[in-house]
Length: 224
Image (cartoon, rainbow, N blue to C red; front, top):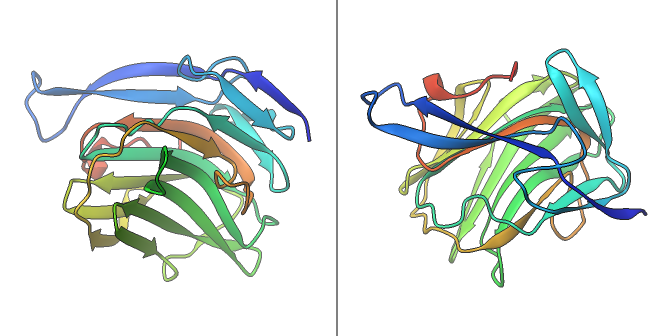
């Protein structure tokens, strides 16, 4: 399994929240996984051979579901008591049944925020999201919300300090109460859980982090 250091590209964008006046703007950080050179200026370790691919909407990084992963020594949600995390991704049909494809975790604790997928019958999937905050563990396991595999989707986790919601393509699937506490510095992985289990087979094109709970009309879309 090859190990090397690379960077992926980052873009910073400013946008106005739909429910707020123009002067009350929020800064979001957008990561475009469109090359193998930079990602937010953060050095990253690559395991396996993630591949740069072309998609109808630009470049993306493809993972093989066996040993491809990206690791960063940064926690994008550090210090945020509310947030929105969005990811544009494509889960492939022949991936493992359980896949932890986007994992952010506080150093020296197991407090974490995770996107996961479950593959059903080889041609459908559903979103499973998880947050551990202190002693609280909350799972949004959307087994009744099935989607065809092999297409691009937008998924979002939204936390406002009291609730934890997740969305697929702008549609709310599940919401649970969560007394969330801001996490400290940490690390993250893409393509696998941080402890290198439950590998992801598919591609990731775009990720966006916002230090506020966004409404769906302010989300990115599967075309981003």
